[in-house]
Image 1: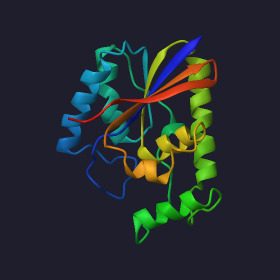
Image 2 (image 1 turned 90 degrees about the vertical axis):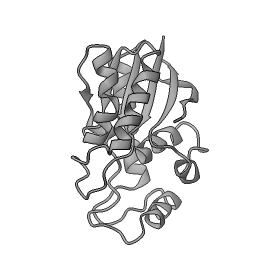
Image 3 (image 1 turned 45 degrees about the vertical axis):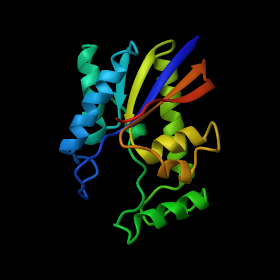
Image 4 (image 1 turned 180 degrees about the vertical axis):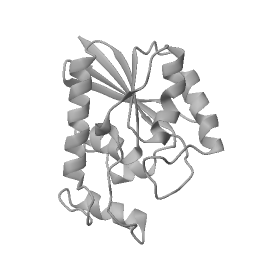
Length: 186
């Protein structure tokens, strides 16, 4: 039985240190409308999201269209890079991507975050077998999940992601049979 998952990286947000409640920016809301319009053509059955506000706001239009609530799933929250802000975000990410087990103080390694994300994917595959599921998530955890299936999804690939972005993962039971980008911002 084929299950289709659409990983949706959230739209542009207003930066703040409050990871959980950081909302979309004006530009982000416009892009979220485009995401909803594009996904409304995909016959979505369920919408799942990271509990972070920017991810929920990016996919809530899709849930509204299918007249269902967004199901929150903490496994799809962004990877916690560190407890304290780091001097250079990109250098800090480059370091964790270069060593699977390395983590900054209070943060998650690639290995730990990927395992969390994959457990979330397995849960979705079991709970919504044969369905078409949108998952509102974040760039780093999204690519960590995809890298569990194909190593070409790495730090360099993450750097090329758009905000928002959508990748379709197709599964036969729990076996991935394809990944493809299905939407690009206009």
